[in-house]
Amino acid sequence: MEIVAFRPEHAEAFRVLNEAWISKHFTLEAKDREVLEDPHGKIIAKGGRIFMAEQDGEAVGCVAMIAMPDGGYEVAKMTVREDLRGTGLGKLLMQACIGAGQAQGAPRLYLETNSSLTPAISLYSAMGFKHLAPVESPYARADVFMERPLP
Image (cartoon, rainbow, N blue to C red):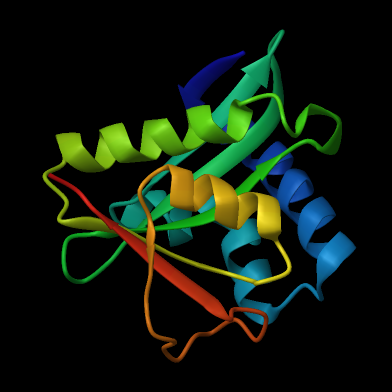
C-alpha cells in the first residue's frame, strides 16, 4: 500500500470509490456530485489536497482535504475499497491528512459524518478528533461534527 498525491488519472477512481460507499449507505447529494465530477477544480484548485491509496498501482482508497476560510481543512470523501476495510488503510490516509495539515500550518482538521458510520467515527476519535456541536451543513446526512486541532 502506498499513499500518493492525487494525479489527473485518479479522477475516475476518486469518483467511483466515493459513489460506491455513499450510494450503499445514503443518497448521492448535489454537493457530492459537484465535488466528484470535478475534484481538481472543486478541491485542489481551491487550495485543498487529495490523497489516493494505491495497491499494485490501483487506486483503492482516497481522502480529500478541502481548504476552509480559517486556514484549516475539512477532511472529506474518505473511503477505502470495501474488501480492504479494516486493514489500517484508513489510518494511513488520515495520517497523510494530519501530516499535510501540520506542514501547511493549518490550525485544525474538521469533518462531518453520519452517526451510522461507527467504524469511521472510531477511527476519527482514535486519531484525535473531538466531537463538536452540530452546525448547518450542505449534506443532509451529516449529523456528527468533529475536529482535531493541529499543533
